[in-house]
Image (tube, rainbow, N blue to C red; front, side):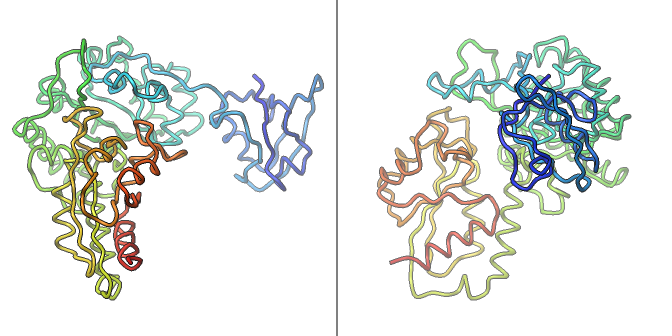
Length: 438
């Protein structure tokens, strides 16, 4: 297996050795390189023998460097191989519920454990062989993020739509025995994998030492489910039933293991009309990228920044009228947070937008589109509109409906300001807009 080298970092060990762009990497210390995981593992040593193909000549380079220092090679793709795709037919697959005009990149169903290691993506392990499990252990690829959904083999086979799903618990035990740690998630569907099934899932997972946490997330349903299995969003009572199970286990496990282990997402608390837990209840916020503790962390950070800012929030002299556009589920929480920590000279209104692109049952801020912003914020009296930066694609700033940020600003006739998800980011943006008001 040869990997085309597309670039060499200046002054790197590879550059000093004479490796060139266009060479093809063959082996490192005699071992074939499957992907970037192998590349990272093999290049960690102080002394390396790097074999490349240059034209029709095989060249060996003997390289000395600091331990763990980057070798300095760039490749065609970050992973050095193609993305591993999903082989499941999940009952709740979000990709199957996309609007017909959704961009093609959103339709890619990846399920790649290497992306789990590098980016925190959740994977099901249904496309991972026993041999690959061995490579995960050998490469110390930890922690991983694993979509469990349920531990009952028959039920998991039904939920994921493949008999390969039944192997999960054996895979998890093997990984744990090999020293691999993992964070788990369950996407819960009312009446399917909650209730007694959820009790079993928590009980069996907490017995595996490598399992460090379990996020509980309600199924996400769009308005584009024609021909798919019948599912419904969680009602208030159904969400409360999930939280009651979670709280029983959280109290028990905190005493027995020193961790609450089970962490329901913010959506469950909002759907149940229960208060968001306090900061300490989220421990290290290990599952925050799964929507677990986002609102509490925002409130905690915003409060701390507000209390530490002193004159910055009290300084007046200018005034600005701001709007925050977000998903419906977060609107009341944000209103309360801002009311408790006012910024002098800044009047702030919060607008919870209905999602007409994916459907009204989708209420999170990250899935708000440019079209919904233009339609629902047009004519709103304010000097600027603040949005969370997670509405925008990182590399090009596009909304999910391919609308650009400048197009939204032009349509509304005012600045639309993306804000980082940290509490201090929001406070800084408010103060900056206030202090720059004309």
